[in-house]
Image 1 (cartoon, one colour):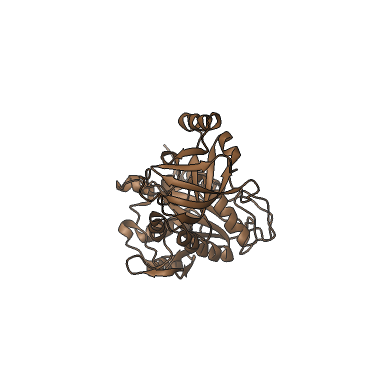
Image 2 (cartoon, rainbow, N blue to C red; image 1 turned 90 degrees about the vertical axis):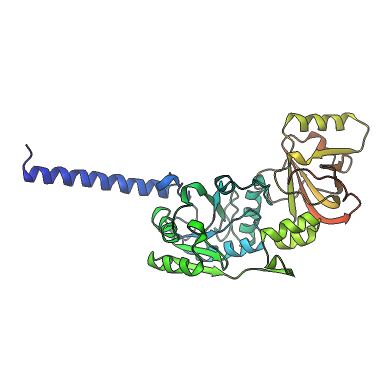
Length: 357
């Protein structure tokens, strides 16, 4: 039988051990381990810098942008820029949303393999390092992190903000003025400010970036929906304006069928290499002829265009036709072909049947 004093010592020892485990878990979460409810902690890394806003130094506060960053457009860059002014900037979005909600899966606007390059472009625009590049003068690197939608979908707006602050260590939150969050999108920016204040987290709401040409049905602001619509029309100039860069289509050529097509082009007398739109990572524009810039086997995160070739391509019947004499090394591609669309030069191929969208 345990005495009262013995029981007290046992309970105290168990409580101390549990507290120590909790502290170790919190430290592990800060290092990038798994946080609560299957949500991975944001993997902050050490970087050279003086700390404070606009750096990735260990003592910089964690500033996250919330949204759906499918397109990584000019409006999203505005959020990242504001977050970088507050602390260590991260884009935080949700993975598996379409699958969880039973929606039709769509090709993204920005190719998954191209996202590191875009983050590097944004970081460079702020005078800092890239997401995978070398340290810059200001030490700024914009990075991204995904939360599994299935793990957070039923959280109320208040629970969601609590998770960001308590479990992930977020100290500043940046969103657009039309952002909604929480179960059934019940929370708006007013609720975000309220719950942020309760958790001693700064909430900054950024005005929507206006599009050059207002649309009666799609609104006045830059949006992923407007960019998709522009690409569907073949209006890559408008899409590029909203993206803040040229739309890059990434064609995966690592598969057996794609490699066989390249070998046929190399051995044949024809001028064109045909890339199937069945193998693209992201949304292609409508059929037509386009002025483009092509990079063969681009390196992840590389923002340089040292090996790029300017040419004209045709999209028709689910294929991209590239003149092999204009881009000779395309025949020897092993992984991917990246095509930056500059402008549409002709609609003469607009009656073809495009590949999957």
